[in-house]
Image 1 (cartoon, rainbow, N blue to C red):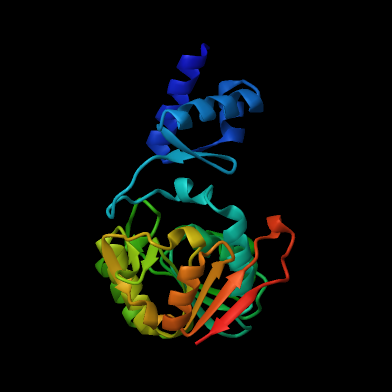
Image 2 (cartoon, rainbow, N blue to C red; image 1 turned 180 degrees about the vertical axis):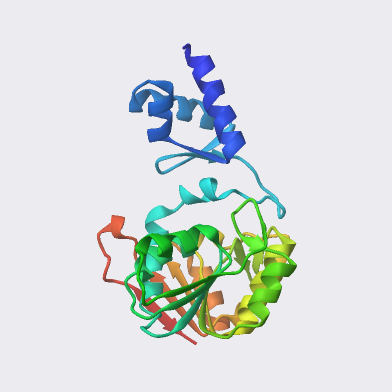
Length: 271
């Protein structure tokens, strides 16, 4: 296969699925890791894809753009892992925790599978699947049902009705964007509605958002920044964002990604 044909095949996959991993492209196209990385470099230079750690994602922007789960899963992996580790410390044995849909909450689920007697409510089939594979008989997992979005969230009247009848100790909420103007937001109106019901059902709101979410505005606002009792981000968060979020949220926690070698230097700022 010629380089141009290979690059066209890569581009088709990225556009179809929202993302492509280097390892999968190496396997499916039968070429070396280095060759795929060169192809991605060419496509990125032409503005056709965005290079990320381990692969590439589709180029796109706008308040209604809704990346799929695959596209989001290859972005900021180290930051999401660090955020998930810190968030897991806030879910104690015997509590009821709600997890919204998203790749950060999916990462968090892997840290919660060993928490005894945990009850989990989620509108994410992928999150529920993590606990299913964990197989703990002392955990209770409730999947809301609903209509599936491109980002694999279950939303709509069925999801809203299920959440409305429940009460949980803590909601771990993943978001598409956060800003002083729009608060926490998402591109999907139905997902925003479901997330608002999850917030109403929870005694405590913990928002999980890596630094790239700052300044991003989705089409529909979920909640104002002041609604967050705890916001967990990472140390890549700009200084102006730290100041704004520390003023508006209950507690701001900045987790240090492991890749930097400073895992234990998490920071906390309290209003």
